[in-house]
Image (cartoon, rainbow, N blue to C red; front, top):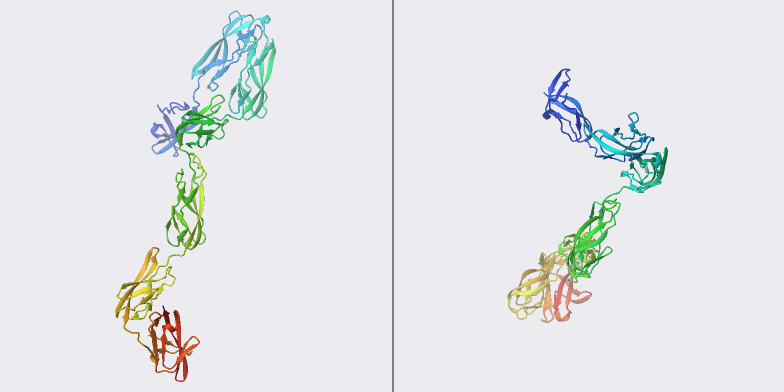
Length: 625
């Protein structure tokens, strides 16, 4: 068996000479001497029976030890009667200090009877006396000082005659309130001070809702309410007649101490009053009203909970909660507040774009007004994306489609200051952006004239691809060539020489926003404008009586140059020439003169007969200035 089986809380395991007779599953037994290395399960942190497991040669056995509560020694005994009347039995009582002492049973004996003839009645705690004088009694508590060491205290009791008896007139100074869950030591002052008997015994008269109980002179309560207690003094009124008095004690909610104050403002601005506040922990603290005061700093004052400052710098304020720690002691804590210059609110944000382009990322920015505003950092968000699919990341906004989008600019604490705990009121302003479709770049220009004639103005034109390009307006310029000029998209060849002129077509923003598209085209300048000879070989027939002349050069006539163009038909009969419903003539030849037309584009209609069937075609021509 173990060398020791009883332990106190916190005591280590004594394995000296520890031998366990282990009984194993195969029914064999053997005495096993063990060490700490092969024992598990011992914990002396709490009281109670503890089961230990011993491992030896791969087998296990168990045994039990007892852990007792930690020893608490007696330090004093109070409340012992100091006076009695000869011939009147006196019950000896006393209160053991501390109340948590392990052993509190008092054994009384007469140490010196003097002239009183004092004796204890049958080994009880009742003291009998027969004459006046003084008697010394001894109070002993076994193992009160230490296990096996008694606590001993002597008391002297004065024995008076019945003629000297002084009755109790009253009891004062009894506590009137307590906190639920907190033991209350019941005390009282007996009047007159010369009263013969003054030992008070307490009892519950009416516990009410408090769940009150009394142990000795200690009142224990569980809940709020009122409790009526009775103070009884044996022989207090007269010999064999007790004095009693009832007292009402109010039981309050358990007192909860303040642990901390947090979330106190740490920033202030000169000229702007700062409301002081804080979070009291725990929230259930009995007292949590904070009183503020200035501990250090210049140009600062406090009115109520409002901090007023006139100078930038640092100020230290003190938060005080009266009776915050307990019913008599305040809780205090200091806080440092940095004071900045006067707060300047935001009044406007200007310079924000109102334009966007689908598929093109754009950086958002704005000018904060006034420029001296204390806080100027803008946070951008989408308020209503509409059909644009707008998204914002940081200060970059993108769109997936066209339309209108509303965005919001927010400046934290833009209207009122941040106090170091809570953001002030934000400045908020909305802006509308109008988003164009995704940019479509020009990829090419086709159908540009390739032939011009000396003395004839040539209208420069071309077809832009793709047809949905954002920008398609062509501006023309001379790249190379002499004697030519361009006016109103017309190539003037009055002074030109026979040869090749290179013109440049430019489309502003054609390649990308801000980047033009350019393409060069050579134009051959011939000496004279040839006649056009239309033959049946150039005509493509259809079943509807309409055909198309192919491989016909462009006919462009200048009014300034008074140019003309002769068109001949070969191999056809019954030829008639029209412009709209106007008949120009018949026969195989017609001449177009620029002076006979206003500026614009026309269609020359031609009818003819082939193999007894009538056919219709048209030929476009343009008149320029």
